Length: 529
Image (tube, rainbow, N blue to C red):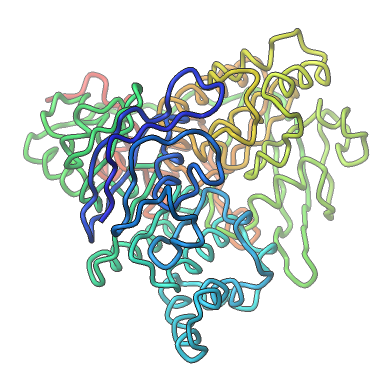
């Protein structure tokens, strides 16, 4: 179905090819999971399948990429649309209409599908993706996760033979991610749809993959059975980390498989102690926060304190109000109630002053990038933050991103752009840092680096609030966790207590070792084997 024949892809001014003499084949009806470090070339590989690379990205492609008998170098994405459906990392950029139902119908209109057939497919796709209640909603009013599901639905409605997905669950809460992946795997098994999917959160999808294509640090591709590739890969999802911690020769692909092995081997985890409480002074105090969009109440009567030296994670399903709450705390969103940071309201200050009190890294981090090169973005951030030259560039390297200063930020991967914005915001050294889905596009190594940076910032006295769907990241980054639903904070407690006792938000190792309160592989030091 999909064949790469000695494919090399090189971008202008790059030190080496992103993909270097790559040859492999994906069979019809397979679900192939593409993995690799942040910036390794996953998006490039996916783009080569539907013609985005090199037609719209530039660079040089040698060799051949053949999809259903078509050489993608000879066909542009529009000419491949009947065969390949593609959903990128930022769905909002790909929308061409204003309303959900219209967006789902648009692709079919371009392919000349009869109106009666279109209506039937729209209804089926709305039900399949669980978004029937959104049919009349403006796309710009949807949460990031809702937009992701609409984008996938719009592609699926056209009934392509190949579905290419770049980080399809990155903006989804665990339950929504499971729903989307279930729909995708149903299509794979029931209608022989070929799916090529790039993900950083492998724990969500590796159990469903037929093959894994690992883009190695050398730019080659290692394709094979999931357990085999994960055993030799440098990419370590939680169950792979568990296997290495316990010395297993096979990486379990599901919680059930891992739990059965744990029970069979009578592995007893040590007692995990609660981290010591943080006694820092309240830095941010919010009371009675309400956020409304017309008749829609996004945030309702939220009271919140963030303490110096404490990392707090905020969990909740898509659309529950997490992002709206963060924007209200930052001062950029009109709201009722009161926010005070060191006694001052950020909303009443000039932007430069407000940024030194509380700074926010949004989900769409690229919206904060304006300069034509990475180096200029870093230099500008140093000046605006009154930081020493090289501060922002150093933070970027610590986040695992080492790119040429001359690179255009638009040419970076989603994860690299996110890391750049995070570095820019951190350069201001505010007492309060708000992060909205900061691990989107980051591999496990980069997330570990981010965890270390966040903890370091907290130890220096910063208060950090992180809104995230990444429960594995939440499990390791902070002591305190908040749970939000329908605009309200409904639960608060230690991360260990809340996650270990949750069904929807428990990390994989908590499920493997239940009822023992284990969250990460690091909790297994000294385990009885």
